[in-house]
Amino acid sequence: MKDFWLSCGHHLLDRLDGGGLAITDEFLKLYLARPELTPPPDACMIERTLHAALLAEPRRPISAAEVASIADADARENYELLLAWRDQLLKYPTIEAAYLALARQGMGKTPPLFLNQLVHVILRNALDGCDDPFVLRAAELLFRAQRVTSHEGALLAADEERVTGTSLAPMSPLVSMLEVAIEPLIEANEVPFTWYVGLDAAGTKIGDALWRGEALDEATRARIVGLYRLTFFDPTLAGATIGRDPVYLILAMTPDQVLRMKPQNLVVGLPIRRLETVS
Image (cartoon, rainbow, N blue to C red; front, side, top):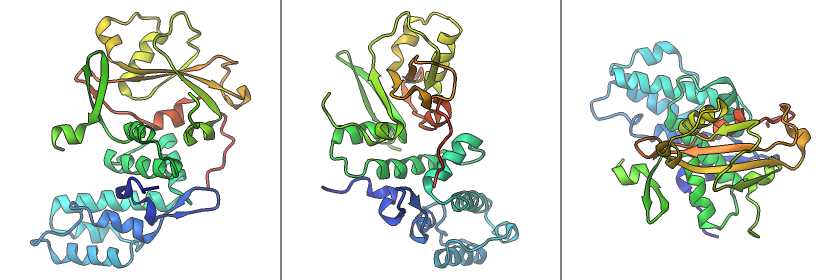
C-alpha cells in the first residue's frame, strides 16, 4: 500500500512495543527546517549559531539568556515557543502521552499549528494500514480546518488552506481502541441527553444550549454538520454516572461556515474511567 501523510514525519519516529511513538532527533529537526526557524540572510550570529547547534544536537539544553541574546524580536519569540514545545514533548515517553497531558492540563501558549501537527502524526500511527481513502479524508477533519459549503442538499468540505490559499466495513482503529459503537444520526428527538461532547467550539455551544433546554433556531440547526450517538459496549468504562445512556457527539460549523474540529474534546469530554497508563 502506498504510504500516506508523509509530511507529518511519522516515518521519522520510533514505534514502541506498546504502539506509541517515541520522539527522535530526526523528528525534532523537522521543526528547525520550518521557515520561521531557518535564519534569514540578515540573521545575527547568535541566531545562526543557535540554529546550527540545535541541528547538530536537537535535545541540547538552551538557556533563556541564549535566546534573549538573539537580535530579532520575532526570532526570539519563535525560539521560545519552539524550545517550550520541544521540552513538553521530551517530558513524556511517547507523543500520545504528551498530547494527552496537553488535553487534560491545558494547552497554555501552545501554538495551534503545533497541536494540529501532533494530532496529524498520532492519527497517522492509529490509521497505519488503512487503505480506505474516505476514512483518511474524514480523519483530516481532526487536524485541518475545513471550509464547508452546501451543494444540492449535501455538505461539501475542503481544506481551508487550499480554498483560501493558505456498514460491513472494518471498524476504524480509533473506534476499536475506545471499545464503543458510534452511530450517525439525522436527528434526535426526546432522547436522554445525559452527556454530550462538542467536537468543536461551535458544537459545544449548541450542546450547552440543548443542555439548558433551549430550542435551536433554524440558522443554528443548519450549522450542525454531524450528530452522533456513542454507546459503550462495556458500561463500566464510563467514569461518570450515566448508566447505559448514550453520549451524543455534536460537530458544527461557525456562522461563517468554517469547521475546526478539536479531537482533544473527546479526550477530556468523554466520561471514561481513567484506568489507562499511557506509555
